[in-house]
Length: 318
Ligand code: NDP
Image 1 (cartoon, rainbow, N blue to C red):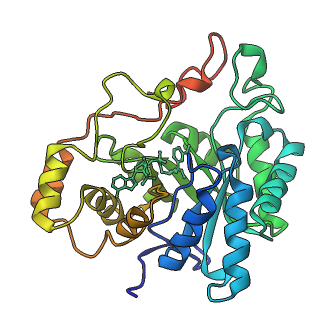
Image 2 (cartoon, rainbow, N blue to C red):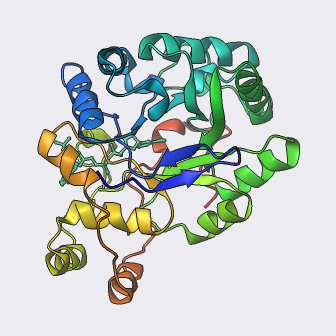
């Protein structure tokens, strides 16, 4: 099999550019999806405590690593700290819970999932008093606990997710241990070139989430008149030209930009199709046409973290 493209870290660790997303992959299907992905050649799996399925993902890891053909150290595994565990005493216990569920000794990458702190036990807040303010639990407090987790060898690399350039700058100004990775929404409707340039200058590896337009979210989370990426006529035309699927064009575009990308699928055919995305180059005409699609549209708005009067009303600093 052709070696996968990778993103390099300062210690020469390599994060495979194409990984499998697991958000919305239901219990009863996610273990099979992860096993299929690993056996098809994926070496990067994206997880999070809040997806509610790390235990099942862990069953697949245990099965595949016990079988022995694929070794733990060959696979890049990311997980994320949920927003209710930002207080310094809660970070390492939350990480240990993820490790326990995933049946692992260490993670390759641990991310602060959102720059928002909830009270312990709050999944999705419904009122202001379920949040901590930025003064009560500043992000640097959470970050210092992440640094400690790395020192203890529980994780190899640490980073953040859903942080704007302003929030990254603020964090970098307060720490000697810069985030090594950022995971944000990126696709042809949301290029975020300034953010990518900032990350490149600061040695931060970027992973693109919702690269296909985040298909199967509940209606409550969907914006009105949400545009389809997979059916966008430009993407469909470029796909036809290269004899590829629309999904493969979207994944290839992300890899060509130098980001990692984590399409979610629980369907065996699409899991394999997505990994086989980057066998050819998109040419200058393709890239110019895709440039025209950027209209700053977000599928994941973060609105579910904003209640009237809390201190997080502008998550993306836009
Ligand atoms: P994606 O953009 O990956 O889209 C997933 C949807 O596309 C599913 O409905 C899937 O259905 C379908 N699909 C997959 N492959 C293809 C294909 N080749 N052709 C057509 N349809 C396809 O959505 P996500 O929002 O899940 O993003 C990917 C991952 O990114 C998440 O799973 C998660 O790991 C991460 N993420 C992180 C966030 C964060 O806050 N850090 C936020 C959002 C996502 P099917 O399964 O039936 O194939």
